[in-house]
Length: 157
Image 1 (cartoon, rainbow, N blue to C red):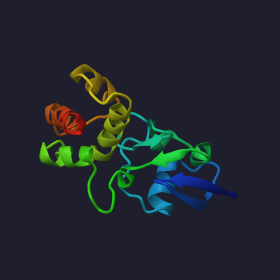
Image 2 (tube, one colour):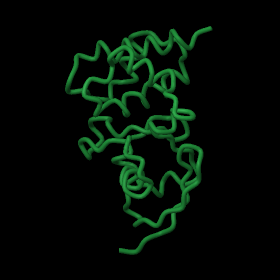
Image 3 (cartoon, one colour):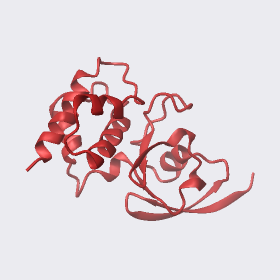
């Protein structure tokens, strides 16, 4: 299978990778860029574990061709921390026990990050809607929603 050279901006850095035209964004992130925070869950766009942001919008990396994000900004869970410090949202998930086993957490955090960027003071209904595409098999979502609410409250002046 022939490969093509892809130029991807991920977490503010430009990367050039050789990948088949059929390469999924999830594969490139995990296998070629060693950004393993983005999780492989269902492989069919159903669980949300692989959620990343593309130009600020949530996107499922397991069903997105890597070539389709050339010229766009891709953000993964690793890109939220600054100088080794967790973002406010990551910290809220940690402090309010929103992580549970942690497998779904990167996707949940990225979906919540997109929400908080467009709606800094979301209602519980807005949080539930933003996270509707993300499945957690460990919890009833209460702690996850509380974590997003806490991050929103902390960010308010």
